[in-house]
Structure formats: structure tokens, C-alpha cells
Image (cartoon, rainbow, N blue to C red):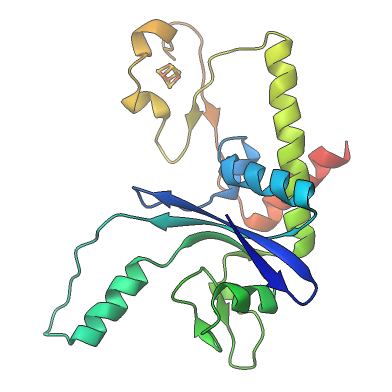
Length: 212
Ligand code: SF4
């Protein structure tokens, strides 16, 4: 966790070092799955009264470089850096992007998932970001979903409902299949399907939930 000092106050950046290549998927956040980093961010921002600057994944995977011609050491260096570009979600604010990458003046950042146009504004197309208001929706939703999960546990709702996303489920690699007995053919069990919706639609759905 790193605090960044801006002209208008302090910001928090959280980086999770992973041994795999991971990115944030708001569809999963909506389903209550990928909430770890947003939970940390929300808790610290509230406790310390600071603003979220982003949540990032840094992949520690060593990747094999490929080139179809002889390349220079500088080009190799550039390719390595590209492979280590962080994924995640950034606050789409020009000064926050520059705080995260103080060498960036225009184009795509080599460090964070953000880009700046030649006129100096946030390049929305190449930035995986949310506005301040949208970050607030995410934080409020995290608060909502954690309370929701706790309520369900306390009320005894512990149904077996593994997720199903893009043809994948956690059951594929699970060692507890024989214990939980999940079987869509025999026990009328069913998956919790995770839809694939655009950021704007998910944020709208989150907004409706937190306004209830
Ligand atoms: S096999 Fe059972 S315990 Fe394992 S992930 Fe699937 S539903 Fe959960």
C-alpha cells in the first residue's frame, strides 16, 4: 500500500503482487467475488480519510520474450517493462495518473493501465479507470455486499452455489468435490452465472443496490 500526496490531499494506491496474470473484472466484483483489494482500499481510505488512487495487480510471472527479428538490448528492456505493466483499476484523473507514473506526458503508461492523449487529457479508450463518483459507487457497493454476505451467513443461508464464468467454475480444481456433493445432474444444484456486462451497466446495477 502506498500513499501518494497530491495538491488536493492524500491518495492511496494498493498493489497486489501475483504469481499469475490477473486483472480486475467488475462483473466479478458485482457477484461478490473479486472484492479483496477494494475492501482494503475502502477500509483504509475511510480510516485515514484519504482518497483511492487505484488498485493494481503486479504479475511476478517471468514471461518468455518473442521477436521475429534480432532486437536490441533497449528493445528487450522495453518488452520486459511492457510485460510488467500493472493491471487493475485506476482513478481516471489526470493528476492521479501522473502521480502513478511521473514520466508519462502522453501515450500509454508503461507502469499502470492508463493513457494520456496528446492534448493532455485522460485517454478513456486506453485507460482502465473509473471517475471519483464511480469509485465511490464501488466503495459503497463493497460495503453493501460484505453486509449482505454476513446477513446471509447469520440467517443460515449456506447453499452451494459455485460461480460459472466463461465456461469455467472453481469446481474444476477443487479437492472437496466428494465432500460438498455439488452435482448439477443429481441434486438440483445450479451455478451462479456471472454475466459479462460493460462497466457502465455494472455500475448502474451497483448504484441501484446501494440506493435500496
Ligand atoms: S466442488 Fe464444491 S466445494 Fe469445490 S468449488 Fe465446487 S461447489 Fe465449491
